[in-house]
Length: 174
Image (cartoon, rainbow, N blue to C red; front, side, top):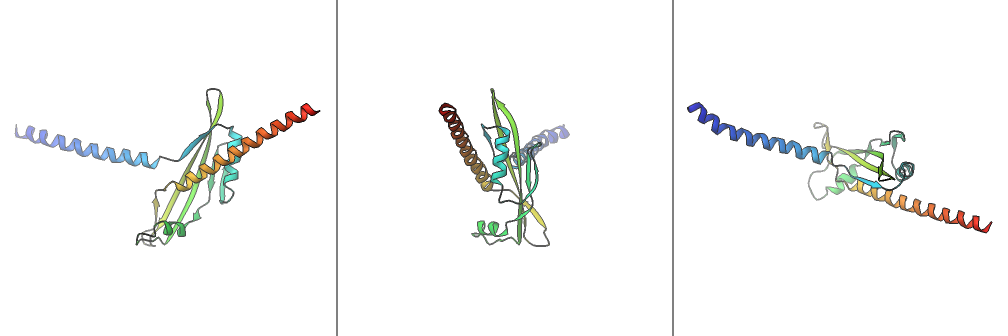
């Protein structure tokens, strides 16, 4: 009976510890894979063109329209990271990031829509002994790019409407 009491006391403790570990794993997964994205009611080609337009200032490594993937090269952002952390005493020796943008075609009812997802991989180096460590993105740059894409796509739609009106007017005047 003494062994059964020990098991009865040990089993709940084991379950509590296991549930905490699984929650931490779940929290890490949800935080890690929560990437900024937005769905646009435009064609895939329009969205891809807007992505190319918005990424002109970045050093592009890979762009594959068929796969819907655009990747930048590693870019230094040490000054920006140190400026953002200027209130704390810890500054980084070096920082770099790269962006991966995925463009996915889909449909809502009968309309074509396009989902654009942006993943920013941020690495920082405190000193040479520790090496590079991955730092979770604050999401600001990704949101700025998504906003820029929204503005570009809205302007593109307005230009298309104006061209359609102009074409109709020319046909009527002919």
